[in-house]
Length: 266
Ligand code: NAD
Image (cartoon, rainbow, N blue to C red; front, side):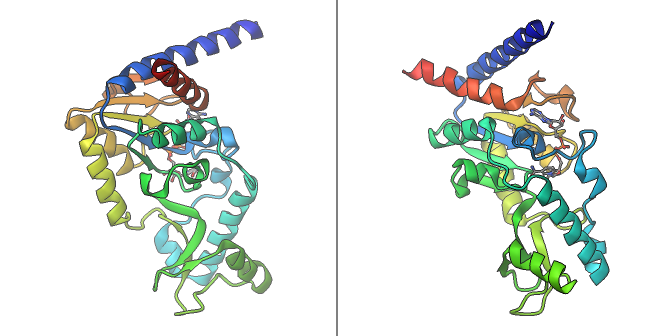
């Protein structure tokens, strides 16, 4: 029984990769939008799957974070609890495959909702990644914008029982992510709109496509004539809008896509 389901899974992966390869070979401007499902194979949990530690450490809304020192301490405590959950995580085969596609000029831009820096760690040049929700591997002062390292923020919290403050200006320091209720980063949104608008193929990977404005980008692309595809385990909010949808694990499909494209070239 197990052998049969393994075979069925291998067939699904192969079918999805071959179908994707057909679209990719035709494309001239291929853009990818990634979500938390891209990183689950590395042990970094997504937001909505049952048992996710995000549910026991829910993100603090921005207005509450600003409102009190106590809320900020709690936000930092939750952040470090989540970080500890996947400490030492490394990019998965999906990240590595995507990095190869970017470096070979097949993928133009990776737009990501993720905050884990995994695309860059896997080798995607920083200027090819657009981080719509920021980056959780460092912090910034909300006043002067100065970068702060997490180790020092943690020291302040755990040794002094204080939420970190900027030593340069005294401002509030926050993880460099975009919280619920916080304004989207303007430059990144503009770059993402441009990339989506110029794409002739957009592939959403590992995203429930429920969080806007990120989820609106495939529709911008499609409105400008792009083919919109989804590679996601389970349903998304835009299943009815996509040209084709592959309900499969992302990592193995992307790895197979890379080998399939290079077989054709060699
Ligand atoms: P989501 O949790 O809403 O959706 C993830 C989707 O990926 C789900 O549909 C899930 O079934 C699917 N999935 C999980 N593992 C998969 C796999 N191996 N292959 C294919 N599909 C898989 O995530 P979202 O749409 O990105 O929205 C959540 C928000 O939370 C994001 O805006 C993001 O900023 C934040 N977040 C980030 C991270 C991260 O940086 N890794 C992790 C959790 C949450």
